[in-house]
Length: 144
Image (tube, rainbow, N blue to C red; front, top):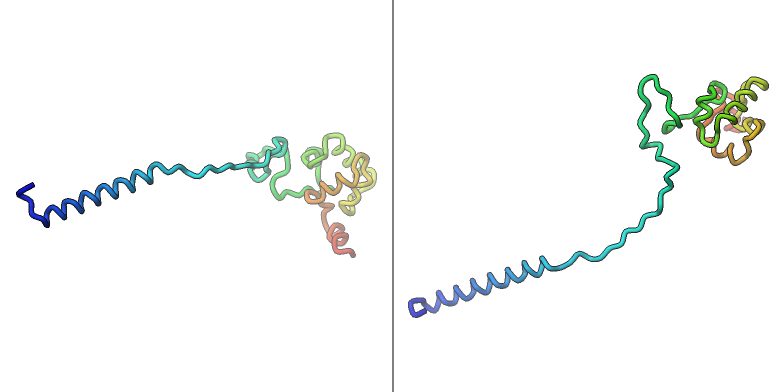
């Protein structure tokens, strides 16, 4: 090292120190582990698929369940449409049709309580999905 000046030795020493420092810093960053995290999710019920994820039926096909936002008119629905309502099977759908034939049009959704096999709980579950159609339902909702 006789041919190197004092200034060059200083620069060489500073450069070596810088390389060692940055290399150590880089390696230290590579060895840090990610913090340990635990993710917990509530179990999902497999029997109730999200209606928003259901695809619309193809042209001419009829869906097996209600589409998002769909409301069934009790006075115009057939047995197939009534059967798609939650909590209504083929027997209750037939009972609704028989009641409608014997007593005429439904004046309000509350008239479903007169149908055999439909109680308060079933009625409350059906309210968002059914209407009695026309002005009778609107008048009943406004208290008039």
